[in-house]
Image 1 (cartoon, rainbow, N blue to C red):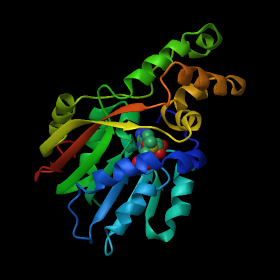
Image 2: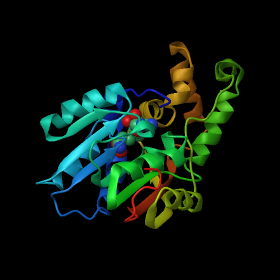
Image 3: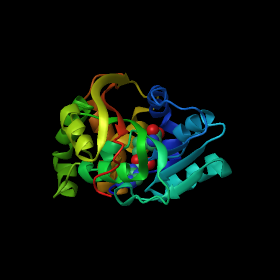
Length: 256
Ligand SMILES: C[S@@+](CC[C@H](N)C(=O)[O-])C[C@H]1O[C@@H](n2cnc3c(N)ncnc32)[C@H](O)[C@@H]1O
């Protein structure tokens, strides 16, 4: 896994993420007694919405970040099985009936391996429903951030910088899913604008967290302010979400 997360701050400012996830959750077909994996559960806010749909079922909530896992465990208590694991190394004892993932896959750079691990964790015929940043996501913000990163004051901290995200397109994603053994794959992009209540905190915590962590503490706030200053007010994030719906083929994952 790449960056670390300020989980306390994410739990406070992540409301727009939870709101986007609610519509994704609606795409899961549940009878209420399934075991569902929340892949990249963060602080467990979406896992909570999922739990409400599973009165007789179970949620396995997995995240790689130790602080996210700690807060998710506190938020969910014994209602969910919260585990710390990198999705790229995911190995469950028993396959789950379904997988939900929101706002996570773009933080994982190796999608080929990611979909292979998810296929191995899902029972044949099980449903995967996901949404993450897709091709063209937050393009104006990314351009503004790159310009500020190149400014004299900041450039020295970004030597060898590699973007922490991959914003994949629907066609390449569908092909990867099919190679991993998924069938009935549907992938599509969906624009979604968000105007955060506290733009500086939102950017520092979520979107620009990896950039901010490259910088010494005394430069962090001014970096974020410089990015905000380059964009029209009020700050509007032009999200483009990549939606993924698929079933695991009856033959299961070809990698297992
Ligand atoms: C923006 S948060 C989304 C959290 C939650 N799903 C939501 O919608 O609010 C992204 C989460 O993905 C997790 N994540 C990123 N890469 C991961 C990986 N390789 N394995 C497991 N979790 C990962 C991060 O630790 C973080 O908690």
